[in-house]
Every structure is written in C-alpha cells, then in structure tokens.
Image 1 (cartoon, helix red, strand yellow):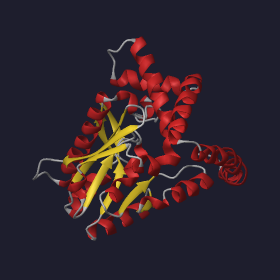
Image 2 (tube, rainbow, N blue to C red):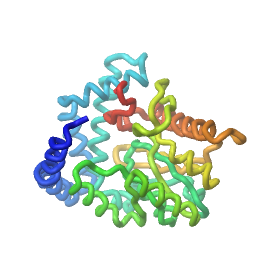
Image 3 (cartoon, rainbow, N blue to C red):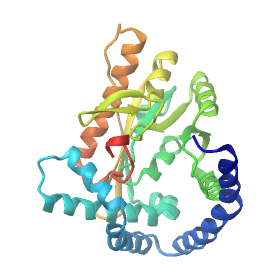
Length: 297
C-alpha cells in the first residue's frame, strides 16, 4: 500500500502536471485526425501503429495473449496476427473522430436492430472491429440507450471523450455505483442498456476465458435475472478496410431453474463463450493488448 503522503503528491502531480501535458499533446492530434478524410485518417493511423507498436513492450504482451488462445500456431502466424491487429487498432483510433460520417456514408451495415426496437434489453459487446459503433446501436434502433464506461485515467481526456459522444443519443454511466443506479432506472423504465464483456474486472466472478479462469464482469447476468430482461450480444465486424457490420444477435439462451449464483455464473460463462467464438473467427480484430487474463497477461 503506497504511503498516503506520496500517494497524494502523485495524485496532485497527475492532475495538474501530467494530465494537462498529455492532453496538450493528444488534443491537437485528435483535431488533425478529425479534419482529415476518414479513409486517409484510418489508413494513416493503421500504418503508424503497424510501424511503431512492435517497438513497444505491448508487442510482447500481444504475442503472449495470442499464444494463450492459439497454442498450436507457428511463430510466423503469431507474428502475422500481431501486426494485423496493430494495424486494425490504429485504424480504429483514426476512425474515432469519424464514426458518424462512417455511418452516414453507408460504411456500416446493420442486422437485427428490430430485436431491440421495443421493450427493455441488455446489450453486450466486445472490443472488436471498431467498438465505437457499440455506442450508436441504441440510436440506430431508434432508442436512447444507457452505456457503462470506464473512465480514462486522464481527467481532461475523459471529459473530452464524454463530450465527443454527446451526439450518440445516449446516457453514459461511470463504472461503479452510479452505473448500477443508472442502468437499473433504465431497465425499470423499459429502456436499453449496453456494456462490454471482454475486459478484466478484478471484482468480477471467475469464469473460463480460453481455458483460464478470469475475473469477468457479471453485471449483465445480475441485471437480466433481477429485472427479467433479455440479453442480446452485439457483434461488430470489419470488412474490406473501412466497411463494417453491426449485428444484434438472437436473444441469449440460458438454462432456467438454476439458483441465483449458478445462474449468474452460467449466463456470464455463455457471454464469454460467445466472445471467444468471435475472437476465433476474426482474431486480428480483437484488442489483444488489454491485460485480459490479469497475472497471466
């Protein structure tokens, strides 16, 4: 546990020195991307990430994670996937200022939106394809959804992140108690909430993810049981560079008549299993650099 004084000093340093400096660097870059054509912005950032990311410590982590999921792949195949996912992550960054333009220009195909046009629903996605589209799924279905978000460590960039999604026709809830209250209110009013199910949550329940028991978010399962609300998995796929498909899949089916703890576990396991299937199908499109397995990653 850090010394209280040193912790307070670091907190003040981050707020008044580190975060403003990082924001001064990041904000002009974001504005430059915003004024570039979306196709150029996407491919330019993809190329930069392809060239720079392999030189960072994250490259080793990505390869380690790929070996967890694909233990039988050759080193050549792992290296190829590593470079592919860096390029696509760079594309996602380059496309962030252009999400609305990508939708308006017909680069996003949708499927299954009719499943969530009426009544309450819990939507669960993952960091695949371009996950920024997940924040538009409610609006695309003609609904005002509520989304849980994990704040960026930089308080300035976090405010900017919220502001730039103001046109998503959505409510955003910071992960924690406020998110629980906000989502409960939405569901009780027959509305839609969305969250991701592929990130490490230290206070989550232990569920297998590619054979390793990993702390996993159980909020979707808890809410589905408490409010008797269906869960829909929402998949985003990338095609042909900057073409995408967003699919609201069939209602998640899970066994009935289980006790509460077993039901929460089983629903969470099924969510993780479906995300596994997406990753196996399109491994280059997942966010491999995230420390999904905790100490394993």
